[in-house]
Length: 224
Image 1: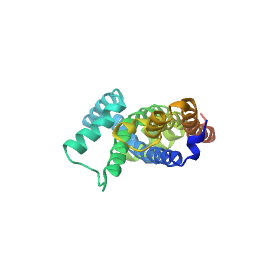
Image 2: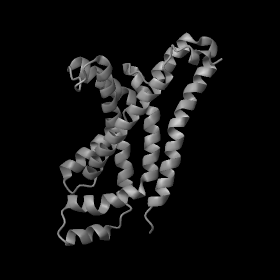
Image 3: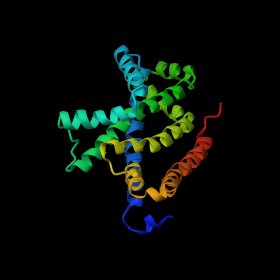
């Protein structure tokens, strides 16, 4: 039943390694972009607050497939932006990362904003009374506590991101979902075995992540 794994025709581990890379790069970028967006959403500057709110509502309610295809068809094929990729394979990977960051950053933003709301207002007011600027208060007082409060929600975002990397197959990125599609077409007599292999692969990626970050969440939780 699993003879296709011994044939050497399919690089399953290589496909999952691309999935891991997509997840890692997108997770780092989403954390940075989501933090910036959260800062905008609680900013006292109306223009920044309006941009952050509009961006989050627009992008979060747009299907990820549309965003990924928009990056490929709009940025690359129409505008010729390849993000420094030397080959179409590298360009597709980087465009997929960009689309995942743009999408996942909105969920990071909302998780962080909920964490910011758990920080007592008096702490921020006291810091402002000492002469700290808004960004200093956000960086030194509010965000450290907010991050500690939202480890669990961010874990859910990371797990969702890992599964969302399968959408990158729509623009030809050679990750797990694209290989699974090829194997389904070529191994019609072993469909359940193919599904089982890839389902197990994603479980092995997401389950340890959830358990580890769940433990971290309990360790760093703010006691109130």
